[in-house]
Amino acid sequence: MNTRPIQAIAERWGSNPAHFTRLFRATYGIPPRDYRNLPPKACTARQQPCTE
Image 1: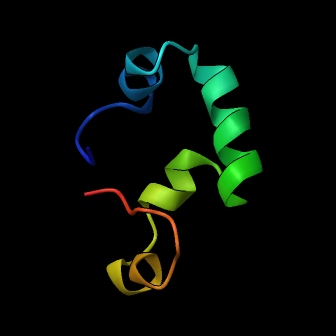
Image 2 (image 1 turned 90 degrees about the vertical axis):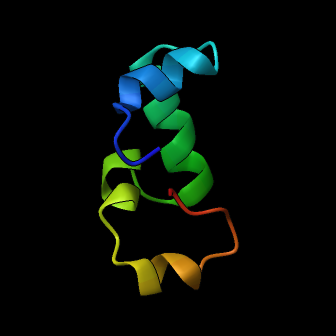
């Protein structure tokens, strides 16, 4: 999913990108772009699934 644009992921889940970003930030505490850019070790420590 790391190579797919966030817009495409939002559309796949039936949401527009702005709404998806707001929901993602509310759930994970950071926007999807920042979450995607986390180093793998930081991502592994999270309870939620990490991007691949």
